[in-house]
Length: 160
Image 1 (cartoon, helix red, strand yellow):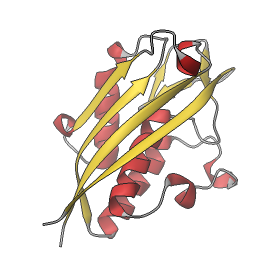
Image 2 (cartoon, helix red, strand yellow; image 1 turned 30 degrees about the vertical axis):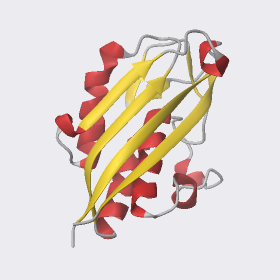
Image 3 (cartoon, one colour; image 1 turned 90 degrees about the horizontal axis):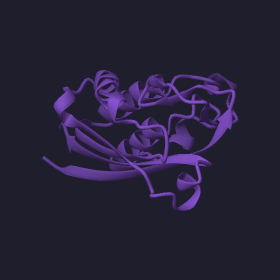
Image 4 (cartoon, helix red, strand yellow; image 1 turned 90 degrees about the vertical axis):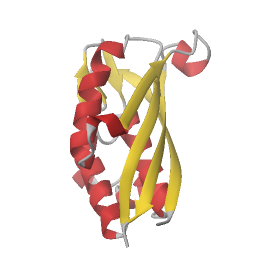
């Protein structure tokens, strides 16, 4: 069977008056991530990694930011759709590995819940979803707490 690896990246600015949603989990913080959907950079990076591995473009092709159907939508719903798209194209997600970049808040206590939610959206056991968090030691837009970012890698395996 053929295997493919895809990489994804996403970044959004922080904004007052929005909830902070990462990995489908609402994390207590005084700002949230700006975006057309819920702004979940972690899930967005995972979607792009999966779509890239399957050769299906990126999330903007499938969920354009100008489309009112996706305004405020949970990124977990979009992730489930991406999973269906990749399966329909003959691919099975083997595992996901992702890293979130955030100066604050501390994300470690929320990672288990994020792994569960992402695993459920992808029909993957929790052990096949790896999520980590790091700061940038006060460097760049993340370090200045202007925004957050995430990287993800997805391994897909051909089903046919």
